[in-house]
Length: 321
Ligand code: GLU
Image (tube, rainbow, N blue to C red; front, side):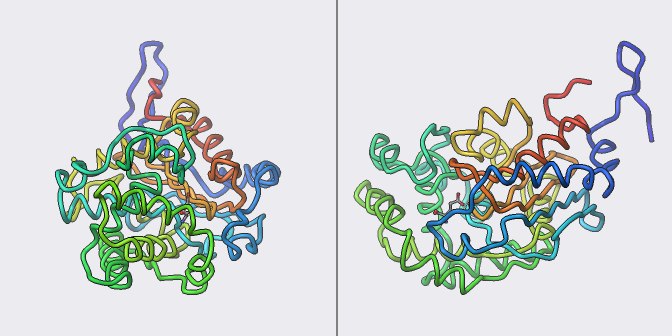
């Protein structure tokens, strides 16, 4: 290891060495406290199957290249991506249809409103504010190649599995539980998008969005997806990685994004299923699953554990020592 010294003479470790130095024992030491913190969260009730999962599940994986990882907890337990799919939907479309097709119709501004806010979309006159909230992702889902929701979801799933070396599958039972209800808000969002000229077919967009949200994997799959935007990759341009990372930093945790940009200092995305992915650019990814979420929709245990790890191992992008 090449050593670098700070002005005061102490050794400066780079983020690569810092992330690589985390062991299973380090992860284990936060287990009890994370589980205590997770009790302050709740399972989402608006998707019945999400409210039935075991709330004290906890899994974490740190991946620094495609073959080596450190993992701890219920790592084999699959969960649906929900909004965790949003950065990877954006990445796929940037590669597939390009920046102009995407950003001529979806913004890059953060929102201080909830992820499914109709008021926000109405005040923006139907223009989706950013790709990390529902309006942006429902619009982006309409750009996926294919004529049916299934073929569209499949094109995304295939590309992600092939590029990231992961094994996402469609959770049909979760999809069946999402379809009949909880869709009123997303349908209203789609209606507004259509009236503003961003969508043609509401049913196709909503059903595609539901399907991609119900893609399911483990923390290992999620950490591998994270590598798509953390490390150089032949299928992905570094400019597109930069775009996705910066939007995760500014919008990935909804209204809490700027708070956690200061507290953690990494690009992060959450999903209401309790998953969390954090990117250490050029180094690797940290994926956490802890299903109880706060009122904003972010995993309580997940954010707690991530914050402890980042502070203990000085992983923030803004760390100068
Ligand atoms: N499918 C979820 C919804 O639209 C995604 C929300 C999330 O994971 O934050 O409500």
